[in-house]
Length: 469
RNA sequence: GGUGCGGUGGCAGAACGGUUAUGCGUGAGCCUGCAAAGCUUAUACAAAGGGGUUCGACUCCCUUCCUCACCUCCA
Image (cartoon, rainbow, N blue to C red; front, side, top):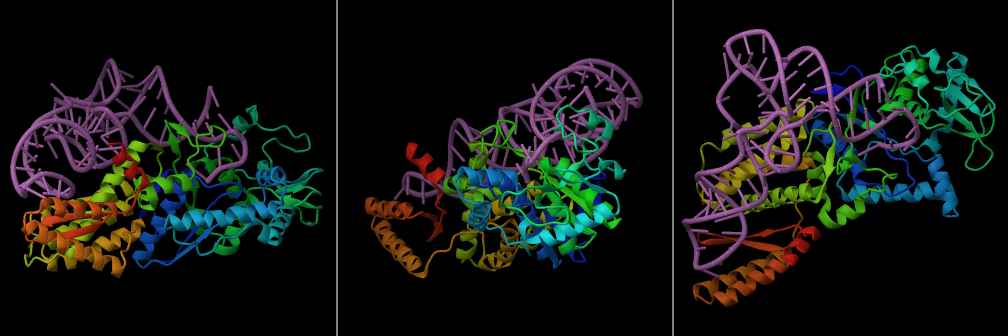
């Protein structure tokens, strides 16, 4: 598999025959997660699901930053503790991402649970003279890491001349960043240098090295983390280990709205809960995978709607497959399947192009729907297609809602009743049954001599659109 | 100002030095008791601007312009 590496700006080969270790920078837990977080995490979810489907062993570590100024501020605002805030939003995180059908990581380490590792990490950085203590805390000395700037392609002197770096006279260099911040207010921990809390970047170095070792395959996150977060992580980690840190840096583009980054300060956030409520997890996932991961995606109702239409086609495809009862056999099915599989896999293997993988998937959907509509879909063929269809669904993390047995029986009986009315040319009565089913999100397809049903996912945005029509 | 990703038809989005991917949308028709599903067909004469290389460039080179992101917390 080939992946574009941010560090060397070239495609790198990922050996998927061995265990692939992935560290993904997760969220700071001080507020609701939004669709931008969802995109990054869904991209990595599909990546790991694809690799696992190929039999590759994955160790997937995703952190929670649970100590941070924003958490502390939020706690003050709500008159509670930082711990309560972070616990609340970790819980909230899992509600959102379970609903998005994101597979749980191997582990979700938290900064506050790794204070000892963090302190040990800092001790060594001080020992090797890469860090120093001031009256405010412990700082990493950027000048001691000659390759500083290699990830973000920044030049140290240009950064230094930048006017926007906070002025702290106690630091030796304005670029130096905090490993440990002294503080006597909660939350704080004891350290050899005094009470305080860790800086932002150090947790990821300490935890990734602890769980994945000094050199692992993929380190990922949003593009906005390249600088300073990942740049600083490299500086700390490579100073610490004297080894190359991550083999491949993979950065996911931003979700924008009207071309601008979704962010708190602009107030253009779409929370996962909000979008989930209106569109559901399948549409969100399709939306997040609809462009190349490295590029921005512009959030719009239009794009969501396009994915809704496609999802409806996929639902139709699924039910056509499971209801297929014709005796026909299409000789070309095998080659179509093989082509789909190849296109799908090749797209993902080639810098993880989910857009092209989706088009391979929807090509199959269209083919099946066409065969079904023209009464050429044999049950044998359907049985061959179903495993491949489901394989792709699983990798993409899409889920067809299940219908209960009792519901199924009820639907079947209503279809039989409708058939009787149709035979008797009592079309009003027949249509009434169809309408009732429609209200239950069951749609009917009248095939020659046989009516099948399709269970449509209930999607609020779709219902509203239909109502207003 | 620096750095980075880009600028392709109404929208989304690829590949490729020579053949106007593809999907969505839109128009018309077919199918149907009517719908739905599906089909057929039409539609877009697309490549930010200007140079160059070439027999030929959306694709390579130069240049100008522009968007966005990062340079401060940020997925």
